[in-house]
Amino acid sequence: MNRLAIWVCIYAIAMAAVESAVVVYLRVLHPVDAPVAALLAGIPDRLVTIEIGREAATLIMLLAVAVLAGRDRWERCVAFSLAFGIWDIFYYVWLWVFIGWPPSLFTWDVLFLIPVPWIAPVLAPVVVSTCLVTGAMGLLALHARGATPQFPRLTWLFAGVGAALVLLSFTLDYRSVVDRVEPPGFRWGLFGTGVAVAVGAFVVGGRRRIDSPHGVRPPPPATPRD
Image (cartoon, rainbow, N blue to C red; front, top):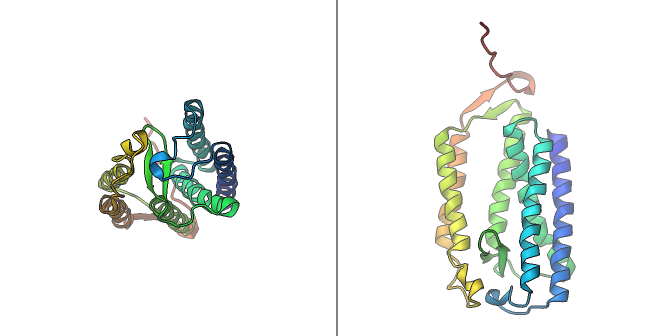
């Protein structure tokens, strides 16, 4: 799994370079030097539709790699979190290398278009992706030592609530992009609460582990026979 994790990271970094290159081409074809409210104003509706399809394809590609890298649901979840986080961080790294954007981590960006535009300062998605990468690497380190966290359902419930709060902080003001007006300001309080709830849930829930000797995961329980 650790060897596959390295290749997952390499894939995510390369994929981020491809995606950032697409954005560079869009900016050259349809230059927009305006606040977040007008970021989509200069792009034809047909290209916006294509962009939505590209975003969906990106998620499918990340999911496909995670499915191929993992042997079970646990490993696939870790691989997807790792791939998504690395891809998102290096997307901005490559944009900065190619065109010097964003000039600041507090620069606003349209993060996603499905099902409505997501908007936030660049720092917000970078924080989320850093948490995903850190959590995935921590789980891989435990896995290498033969300890697999067993997250109870309550952990997933609180993690889901935290994720929902983060998504709300990204999407509550989506009309700013649609109506081409400036957003009132990012909802840092809602975002921070969501991140704290999700991270806290996994930190507390991850204390319950199943250990196995010699770094080998315990086999599943035998199925009783008639």
